[in-house]
Length: 367
Ligand code: NAD
Image (tube, rainbow, N blue to C red; front, top):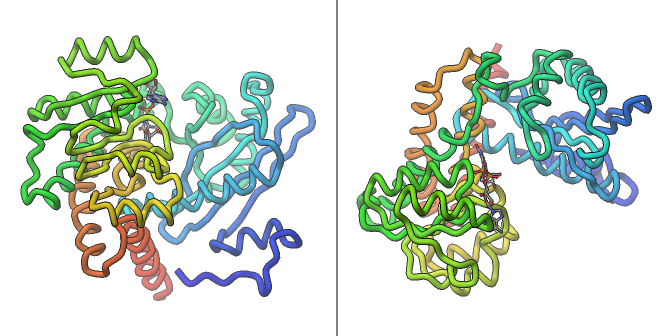
């Protein structure tokens, strides 16, 4: 994408449009309502492929600039995620500033819903950190531009099984790239985080005959999943030194960093967590140099957004799963692009996202 920044852009003098122009964001809506205490920012990064979609995050940011930077970064990420997943969606995101425990109320959420509605469908919201499907029901009282509703409201419900399926097929595509065939039978896989996505992934892997190791901070989850699938628990201080074939981060971000890269013995990193590379530019290169194949997180975990997309069309889980299955080809193709252009896999993924947006922008320009 051609990026035109403000001339001599100085972010201390141009902290808003200057920052928007760095990555060509289209629009920002700043929302304030003293009566309910609502302070929110809705960022629309790109709508070439369709309306922007991305969750609303509630977070006690230290200041407005931190909130603005976060919403700009997250909305841009959504553009790439949807583009690479082949969805007709653009990238957007919203943040509500404040501690959910103290400020969340029906009135605040409905006021926020009115702001979402004022954008006329250019932004569609969904759940994110500190928001629940019940909150989406409340927002829906004021706008139809909401997704991720519970199944009993005609929504798509929990996206985790679709996300986990996408991670599983992506791991198989990675196996094909590394070992020449996509069987995970007999491969040793470490799954870090056995929550909603991690557990379903463990189920797919054990069914295929992989040897699975699990780690989680919840002893309760560890016991439940170890008993159910007969898999081995590993301690946090040992897991990155294990002799494994695949590391699947399914808990939190930034676990691919200087420390873990000096210890990991795997051939593949492929998991559901967002922002796995502690620093994309540093660790995206380092991981490639260390001979580990990194399946980019936003490609691998696109099942969540795919699930929500099918809610907009009248939900059907089979169609969502069939679309998630395409993540296999997408992952495999991006590895070929990375090899052909001699670039790290995360850069190949970004390139795929940009290529699709540019191609569709060109046909949109045809009368
Ligand atoms: P979840 O909250 O259900 O599960 C996360 C698990 O990780 C929990 O069991 C938690 O105890 C564990 N955990 C937290 N910190 C940990 C640590 N330091 N070490 C080990 N375990 C730890 O979340 P989820 O829905 O399964 O999502 C997992 C990851 O995938 C998250 O990063 C999420 O953002 C990402 N993701 C999820 C979806 C989805 O559809 N649910 C879609 C895209 C991305």
